[in-house]
Length: 502
Ligand code: FB9
Image: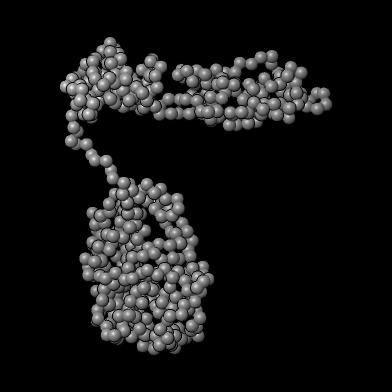
């Protein structure tokens, strides 16, 4: 099968030694893409030719520039719109604008001031109403001449003119890719395209006997099969889930974004006047506004510990209100789920347990490049007899070691529901500084004992976000490039697998 322009190109190469696809398309008055197709077909035949892809920057006309090259510059069109006797400015503007078709800019506005500055026109106020008149009998429209030269492939512009025309959006830089060719080691001027299919007709007619068939390319990759892809957040979630499972943790059921204030705050000994419980920080639900399924005996113990103390605590000494506890909200942390799980653990005989959760939480906070009104919280919880802060630190070292982090520092912190509490820091070699990577603590007795947990049981817990490590892992600076309505969904397919500890 012949290759279009194939033998013509080979003969040109034999006579000239080299060839450029762009120059051939101009020489043969043929579309450049067709010449490129010929080059690619010849390259498939083996070493018949050698071709190197080149990128050249050239100047070309914008759509506006093409209009000016055809109809004249804005200033020339305003000049030509003025009759020998002169005219009023509104008449000129109206007439020049009539010529607007195809121009992206208003000719009159651009042209009038340019023609004035060139001294082609003037406003005559000597006789009553101001009139626009020509100051010279004829003009040379250099802009149009220069643009016609550029359109024809010449580029004689000075840097100053190029800058001016670029500023007026009449010309633009374009990158032109072309193939630079020379004869290959198996060069020949007569080639035929190898057949890629053995057809029934070839077999019936016997024509296959005289045809050349393209050898199988056994290195060719298979066609990618369209399939689903995990979002980077879900890839990283799977990695964290694996780490928890390897450490013997059980995943908590987090399939309730809507939570009562009781489980989200009161059960955690977070006082009802705490600022985090304000609508500025929390999304409260209008419907259903109130929760009704809170265990009444447990709620009574929570009320008492808030108002009067107990279990060695003095409490907060305020009038605790059930209505406040019944307000429904979007959970602000997965620690609400941890509270439910620990309460359940206390019913029917305590046994040590290790739980984890990774799911969405919602906070009515100021949005910025790294914070949205929702994020995924990762939380680990360990309930056992006689656990200490040393155990918590040891578990944190093991957990973060599995993420490839072995340098940790701990800073005393405050959480309403843990005492002591620690912020967790890790040294970031890239940023050359210590960065916060999470928070942790030991749940307070005022939280655990009203649940019914034995007095010698202590519960360790820590948390971090899923978005922060994902942004670091995949190199995102803005959270909106990772989640939200403006995300380029192709990134879901393009992003590689995640290996947190590598
Ligand atoms: O994730 C956070 N930082 C982080 C985590 C990992 C990381 O790299 C990975 C290892 C490779 C890099 C950074 N932070 C917590 C710290 C900051 O990003 C912070 O600015 C944002 N925090 C969120 C909350 O902010 C409103 C991250 C989120 C967070 C903070 C605290 C907890 C959970 C999530 C908690 C808790 C907790 C404490 C005690 C008991 C139970 C739960």
